[in-house]
Amino acid sequence: MSQNTFQEEVTTDFEVLSSNEDPKNKPGSRTILKHLGLFLLTLFFVTMTGANFVGFDPVLFPFAIPNTVDMLRGLLFAGLLLGFLTVHEFGHYFAAVYHNIKVSLPYYIPIPIGIGTLGAVIRIKERITRMHKLFDVGAAGPVAGFIVALAALLIGFATLPEPEYVHQFAGHEELKEYVTQNNAYPDFITDETEQGVLTVGNTLLYTVLASMFDNVPPMWEMYHFPFLFAGWLGLFFTALNLMPVGQLDGGHILYSLIGYRKHKIVARVFFACITALAGIEMIPFLRDFIAEYTALPFAEWFVWGFILYLLMTKAFRTDQLWINAMIITSLALTAGHNFVFGAVDPGQASFIWLIWSFFIAFIVKVEHPPVDFEEELSPGRRVIGWLSMLIFLLCISPNPIYMN
Image (cartoon, rainbow, N blue to C red; front, top):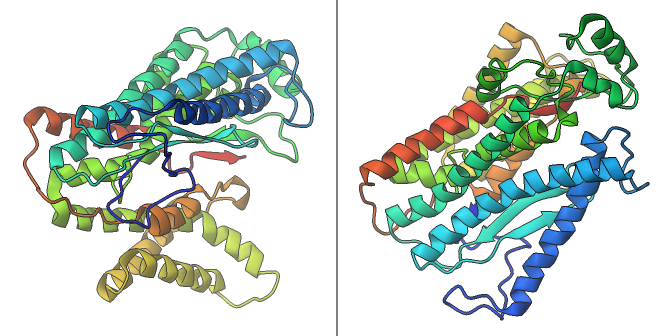
C-alpha cells in the first residue's frame, strides 16, 4: 500500500529513512541490502507457512520442517504471492520515480504466522501537491497488482486437476469418500474438526470466473491450490488497498476523481459501512460473552454502540453531527442484516472488519488530506480510476476468511 506523508502521524515502524539514500531515488548498497533482507525473510516465512496450506502432508511451522514436496509447493505459493506484492509496490515506486517524487523501496513485512507476511509498504518522502501525480502514484500499484493476481487465478482455473487430486492430501477422509463415489466436489463441508475448516469468502469476480471452469474446488478447500489461493489473496489485498478512505490507494484514487468535499462525504459513509460489517460479527460474539455475566437484554448492542462511539469520535474528531449520524447508520445496517439474513455464527467470524475499523480510524484516517492544486484528471486517468473502483467491488468479500 502506498502511504503519503500529508500528516506526520501517518507513519509505521517500517518508514525509517536510510542515511544511504539520496534525494534522487538512488538507494545505496546498505539500503538495498536492508530491503533485500526483509524480502528474503518474508520469502522464507511465506514458503514455510504456505507449505502448511498448500502441502499434501502439511506441518505447522515453526514446529517442524515440511517434506521436500510440500516445501516446493510452499515456495510456489510464496513466489506467486510475493510476485503480486512486488509488482504492486513497484507500481507505486516507478510512478513516484516518473514524477520525480522521493520514495523508498518496498518494505516487506515478515511474520512467522498466518500466511507469513503482513504485506509490504513504500514511503512517499515528500508531499504530493498535484492531483494527477497523486492519482498516478495511488493507482499504479493496485492496477499492476490486479493484473498479476488475476493472471495467477486464471492459470489456477485453467490447470485444475480432476477431483481425485484430493486423494493426495493427508486426512480429508470424508471428502475423499465423497469424491470417489461422485467424481465431484460436495456442496457441503466435510471433515469438520474441533479446529474448523479454513474457508475463504466468495467474491463477484471469483464467482464469475469459477462458473467458466470445471472441477473448481469449494471455497473451504481452495487454500490447498497454490495458484487459486495466491490469486484470491492477491485480489482481496487489492480490494483492501482500494478502499476509498484516507491514505489508502483507493482514497488517493477517489479523491483525485471527485475532489475533497465529495470524497469527505463518501469516505465517512463508507467508514460507517465498514463498522457495520464489524458489528455483524461482533454482536453475536458480544452476546455470547456478556451472557456469562448478565441477562440484561440488548446489552451487546449497548457495548457495541459504545465501541462505535469511540471509533467515530476518533474518525470525525469534534464533528458531533457526523458522529451521531454514522453511529445510527452503522447500527441500522447491522440490525438490518441480522433481521434479513440472520446473525453470523460466532465460530465463523474473522473479525477482520473490526481490525480494519480501528486501522482506518487510528492509522490511515477516514478523510484524505487536501492537495495544493485540485485539477481535472485526463479522460484516460478517469477511466482507470473508475475501473479501479469497479475492481474494488468485484474483489471484496463481506466475510473474507474464517474458520468454519
